[in-house]
Length: 123
Image (cartoon, rainbow, N blue to C red; front, side, top):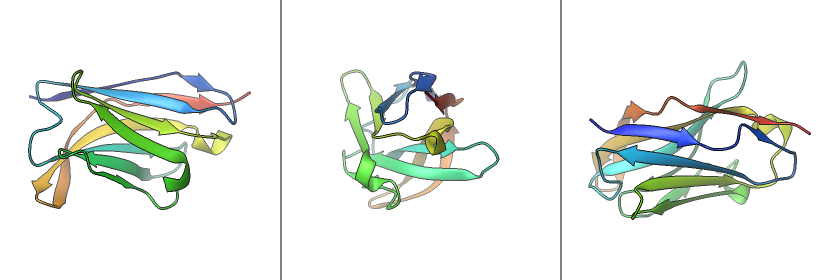
């Protein structure tokens, strides 16, 4: 079954750019109809959806984070990368990569998750 593994720096300074990579195994990120998501959970808060990239390469962003977020993929290495610019301590969270299944232009629930990676924003 597909496996997702997040990687990235555990500590980032305020105003810097956070870059996280999700490496997908046993499944291609270009296979229909899968959608690849980044989701985070800040301490004491619920899950917050950040962005996703579809099997087609089309991208979608949370309106609240869109201005400082970029999601893209490396099909050669089967990886999804999230960049979050100008981070603040409020961006401290566990960041998850997840897959959702669906059809043309839609997806339903998440069926696979990575274990998550903790990112702390602090000087």
